[in-house]
Image 1: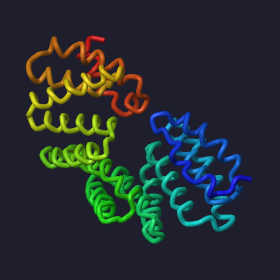
Image 2: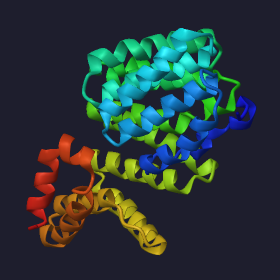
Image 3: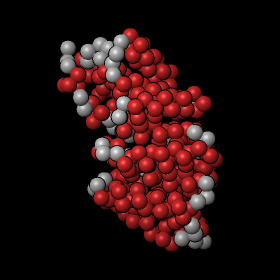
Length: 292
């Protein structure tokens, strides 16, 4: 049997853009782990997370049932229990059962704080900032940011880029576009300081989106053109960038120039199962405006 110390660091195997590959990477480690150990249980929680990201919700719950039974059978450490709660909550939340997700995240929040696990406490607060009703989301986002900013644990502080982004979107959706822009700019500075190229592009996109909402359309368009150029250099494509280019050009009275970007946006975004399920009206508009 492989000892737990040799299994440490398995979280580095995560590729959130490819959960199937992540699940496949975790499976051999699971087979080698000490049955019922903390690593065994934590690996089960991450396999469940990968299954949830693949929208295999029944499989994810079954995997979490296995982790839950092992937790009940003997002491495996508080972190394993916190991670179980987080992933059970995430599966409920992703399958649109928020009323069942929220108690899981609340319990994870309390348990992680009691155990001094700042990283997972921030994770729980950030998930509550997503799962709670809109009137509570801002409060939880601020709690997550406050804990991350005061934590001495580097992993907890590394949450800040995502947290600034999440709170920015909460405020943007509430119509507080100037406040959202300020947070998106903080997220952009955080990503640039750490040399995170992909995350920096996402943060730039968010800044551009907030600028469009503020009526600063020329500035927004310039950002999206820069991002498109970066993607061309990298040999990549981003449907969200195409969509924003099209929206900006439309607002600037250039519908014919916008049309091919709407078509490109639809070609990319229609491949995203979550977007198809959750943003059908938005995709329909992109499709129609692109003449697809």
